[in-house]
Image 1 (spheres, rainbow, N blue to C red):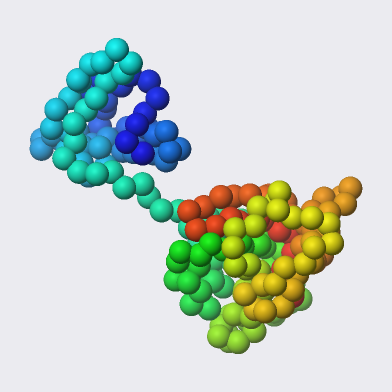
Image 2: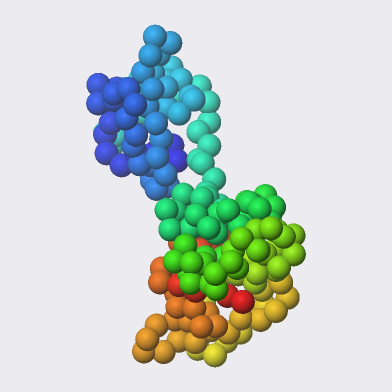
Length: 198
């Protein structure tokens, strides 16, 4: 997180610019009357040129932002219903923890396909059936698509099993098709599915 590919000199920096580090996460440059900052670290010595790059001395350690399975859901335009459900059930804190977790994330369209009135009824009693349904979408551990096999079952946080089917039509969790796999986070992995698991 402290290294960029390429030789970036101070003259290449501009206020508000971002740059992708070798970790794959961005840093932000701020230039103001107080100086030049990388995130919140002030550059105290710039442009120490070497044969294979350049070094800039900073006065603080850069800590990469932590991305959780909850962040993936919150930042997805296709998961607003799931976001509301996770918040209503008070599971955002738990799923932002160390984990690791595997989350099968139904899209807004998946929730919309439920019988009329189901979502309002679930949100009205968030500590009951809603919490159970959400826990049924989460596994303990980081289970990537390469860890799945046809016919396998896995026990969810609810304590009930889901079944994996892999065939010519795709990968299915129970009857929900995985539409996007392996969204990796710091505390687990998210797989997008096209139906709500009940």
